[in-house]
Amino acid sequence: MIIKLFDLLYEKSEIETNRYKAIILPVLCFSAILNIIVLVREGVDSFVSLVVFWGLVFAIGLLFAKAGLIRIYTDHEFL
Image (cartoon, rainbow, N blue to C red; front, side, top):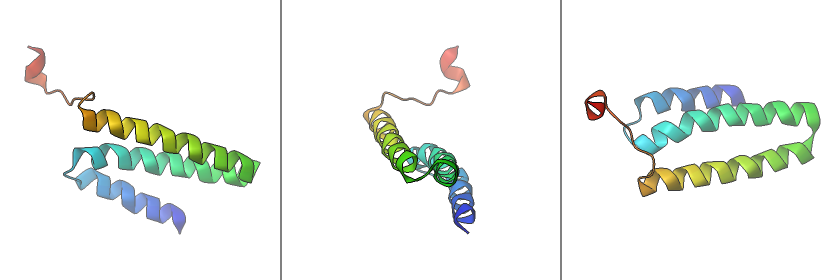
């Protein structure tokens, strides 16, 4: 049931018009699945440390995206 929720979020990211959400949502879904696997295999300690780590990674990525440090290039900009 939880994995189905992440699948729905992933599908939503494909039609998202906000570019920040469209980038962050699929990565969030994949890392959440990874965290669930770690929780099942290694326990709560590893799970909590991974959640904190990925939370920091997403926050930094979102700040970079909002600050304009990450740009989406089109083909004609390289010519």
